[in-house]
Structure formats: structure tokens, C-alpha cells
Length: 353
Image 1 (spheres, one colour):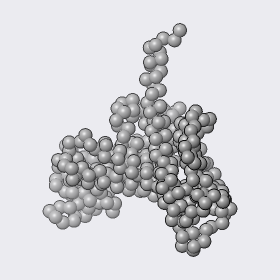
Image 2 (spheres, one colour):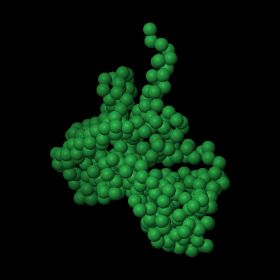
Image 3 (cartoon, rainbow, N blue to C red):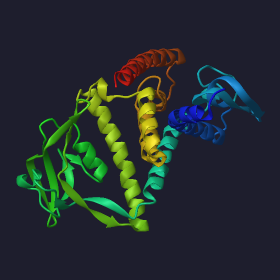
Image 4 (spheres, rainbow, N blue to C red):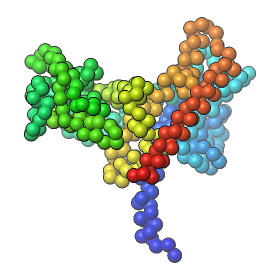
């Protein structure tokens, strides 16, 4: 007979990863719900809205739409009439005006971004004080102080990148091999540029990090700066994700810095073991990442479909469906190949830990 303690021990090791999978499921379902809701509002027939893939556990048809719960909790889908093929139905996606189709396609990413904003607001709600980007004091044996930084300097740019929050600071101080950056500060009401400010550095997983040798002031929480800080943090997440994509394309980061679903799930599982509430900012980052990534004008992504719709709106003539389908098929194959590469890297890293 299986001991209860053994079952409890197994569950304690597994439940964080179940939570991580459910987080992914929620983020993807929110994305699909954005498509679904706008399609319903604009009169497009939705044949099925499903949570999960594979064999159906439950399905119920209400009106034109079948609502399904499927066995494999790795996503979901919103199947619209005439979405990928021609249909003579007047409510088909393909028969709606370009601006209606544009709104339906873009709304998935919009819902991901809205979810990210809400999660950031929830994460910040318990905070009694917020951090600023104004230097309050330097740590003992500070290096950067010797290169011109002073107490009460407000950091506004690092290497010509705008700084709004400490999250921006953290990213700007990442992957700086020599520990030297150009910093622009507000000092006595004036902008001052400090060239070649040096910090100590450390390296982790082939990525170099600057050792921050100063502390910043806290800001007393009010309703006004709570809203402002939530907006600034949301914008910081968006900027960091966008800059990360640029850094990846330009070769600043290699494939080792990219994680797929397996790597991210493993990381979230580790965080959940420590403190499940620490998943909220990670979840916010993932959903914002998904929203921005989906808006990129790449084949097989929502952004690729939006590009074709924009072309149609400009030339007032739709791109032939067979050409669009071919482009999306090629893009999907390339995207799948990239995901397989990243997944193989994640699996290798997990076994080599």
C-alpha cells in the first residue's frame, strides 16, 4: 500500500509545476478570449471556444458557439467561421470589413497587455513605499562614486536608454562586460552626462551583470503615485521586452539567454516553491511578452495577419488568400523550428544542472 507521506512528498514536488502550467493556460486563454469577445461584439460567428487541446472532456453549444474543455491544458483556441478558409456565411470572419478583422486580431494581444497591467497593479498593491531612481547613499567601497555619481542624482538615462523605474536600471546594468556605462542624471535641476562610469561586475550563465553599489530613495505611497508607478512599471516591462528582442536579433544575447515553455515552466515552478505570490510579476512579464511578441509583423503571428490587413486597407484590395496562407505556413514552420531548438536547449540545461 502506498504511504500517504510518499504521496504527499510527490505532490509537494509536483504542485509548483502544475501551477506554472495553469499560469500558461490562463495567459493563452486570456489571449484567445480577447479574439472571442471582439468577434462576438462585431458579429463574427465563433464556431468553438476551447480551453485546452486534444480530446474533449466537456462541450456545450450555446447559440452559434460550442464551449469546450479539452484534456491537454497547454493553451486554447477561438475558431471563427471563415478564419482560415473562404466561407459564404455573412457572419464569417473573411467576409467582414478590414477594420473589423483588424480589431478582432489585435484584441488578443491587447488583452495580454491589460492582464499584465492588472497583475502589476496587484503586485504593487501591498507595497507601502515605492523605489525611485534617485541615489540616496553609496555602499561601502563603492566604485561608481569615484567616477562622478553623487547622492541625490536622479538617473534618467543609461547608455542613451531612458530610465523610469528601478526595473529599467536592472536591465540597463545587464550584459555590460566591462562594467562601464554612460549615465545621464538630473543634478540640481540640470541634466548632467557622466561618461565611462565604472562598476564592479559579476557573471552568471554567461551573462555579465553590474554590481549596483548604491541605494535609492523610497517614495511614500499615495493613490496618485500608485497609479503612476503601475503605469511606469508596465511601460518598463514593455520597453525591456522590446529591447531584449532587439538585443537578441543584433546578437547581444545568444540562444542560451532564450527560454521556451519548458525552461520558463521550470523557473516558475522553482519560484512557486519559495513563494507562490512571487509568480505574479513573472506572470505579468510573460503575458506582456506574449502580447508584444504576437504584434511583431512576422508570418504565423497575429502581427503577420495584421500586416496583411493593413496592406488591404492601404491598397483597398485583399491579398490573395493562397499567397497569405503560403507565407503563414512558411513562417509557422520556421517558428516551430526555432521553438524546437529552444526546447532542446531547455531540456539539455535541465539535465545538466
